[in-house]
Amino acid sequence: MTASFFKLIVLNAGRHRLRAGLTVLGMVVAILAFGLLGTVVDAWYAGAEGAAANRLVTRSSISLAFPLPLSYKERIRAVDGVRDISWANWFGGIYKEPKNFFPQFAVDGESYFRLYPEFVVGENAMRDFLRDRKGCIVGRKLADVHGFKVGDTLTLKGTVYPGNWDFVIRGIYDGAKKGTDQSQMFLHWAYLNETVKARMPGRADNVGVFIVEVEGADRVAAVSRAIDQEFANSRAETLTETEKAFALGFVAMTEAIVVAIRIVSYLVIFIIMAVMANTMAMTARERTAEYATLRALGFSPAFVAAMIFGESLMLALGGGLIGIALTFPVAAAFAARMGTLFPVFNVSESTVLLQFGCALTVGVVAAILPMRRVARLSIVDGLRAVG
Image 1 (cartoon, rainbow, N blue to C red):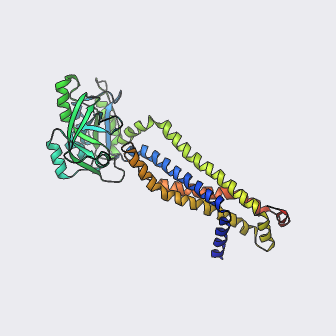
Image 2 (spheres, rainbow, N blue to C red):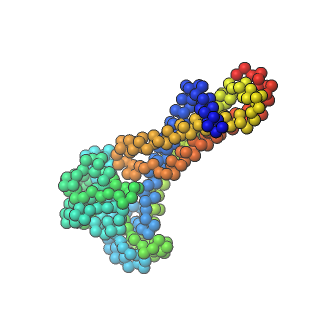
Image 3 (cartoon, rainbow, N blue to C red):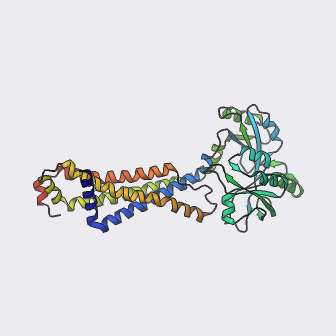
């Protein structure tokens, strides 16, 4: 009985192949668009999602544009609960032309990579990097996009720090997990500082941020307060926050864009739901006489309604599953096209579940009104219908 019922649904859906095909195609496009837009939103939050629970970022309380004295390092290290500390400066150089943007940070190599175990660098590469004052480490994705290889000379035109800067790629780091940002470049803060000291002495011995590792995630709030209290009423007061909160601060600057993308993604689903509902309403209206005949032959209203429900669900889920399957190769192609604009661009499990849920919802909602109409239809009125 079940096999026959399913076969009947398939045959009914195929009676108007063009209509059914266009409906499935619409579902494919809608679910694919929903998945891609959802992945774009996930990419926006990738930095915050990958943050460690026990890492803090200490910066100027005024703005990131204002540096902090390197001398703060030992005072922060002395705060109870601090396990380790490192620091970083935004470099902001241009590789060949502005469109080739990628993050560049001047760091204390040994301590920075100790605090960020998710950046996996080979022992030999790390040794070569630490020995070469002009050495740098680049991410795997960055290397793939620009064709960088170990030993290449990478020239950047400084913006924050004027002039042409030559660096030698001493290593390529990989991500310890799938969501790790592999599009960054790291150079020696010591080399940057000694060059700045020679050219612009007033800007030397300053850092952009301190990265602080806390002994336990449960002590994060207390350590944050203690660090900021240490520098209260000083010439450079600090703001210490979790790494996740620090990353979300950048996302907040473009929150309107993120909200707009979310609205558009659900609007696409709403539109295909309306199209699907119209398709099923047309189908039910054309087959009114057939449904009445089935009722006259003894089939229950529930059976007739189930036929409509099954057809709607089959079209919606068919298009939805194809759309989900296409999301992965299309997302990969999109990420490759965007280069390092989206450092992490992976289709998440939650996005796939949302896609499936949307397809299921469209199939169910589109069938409700036609099912209700057919279930309430009298046999006599149905047999009078022409179609």
